[in-house]
Image (cartoon, rainbow, N blue to C red; front, side, top):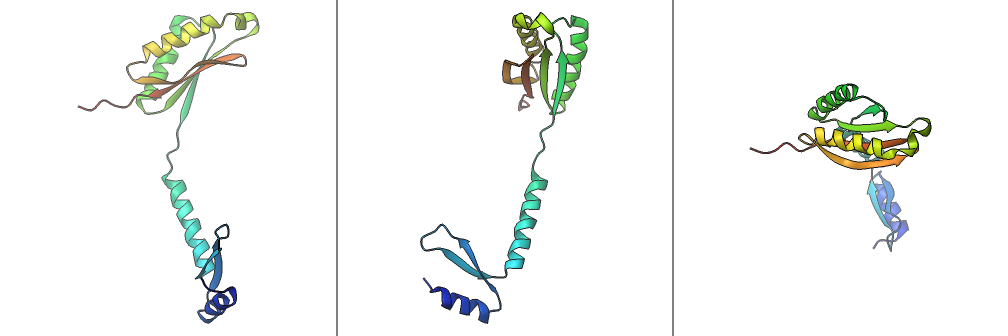
Length: 146
């Protein structure tokens, strides 16, 4: 443990900065360093971390409780293509007017879609009612190892 005045003198002699790195510690921790270089390296490291982040893409298919099977099959085919490419898929059934009083219709549709895509997808978020729509999230299943 070095007194503050002596630490300042050491930093001045070395032509560097005295930087407090852990003010919450008891006693507080300070280092003698080039502060400009420290800030530059920290921002450079943060930039590299942001670049390395994987951006999760989510596509959405929207249906209605009255959507016929033929139209739904087109939507499921799109969802299958996205899941094969590693993209998550939100399946939303929107209710209009009094349709909201029959959520079991939408639940049946969502379960059927999950069943159709069960070979390549897992249900990440089970069907839930959010406002005037029922939502389910499907994620790509991990590829099976040979």
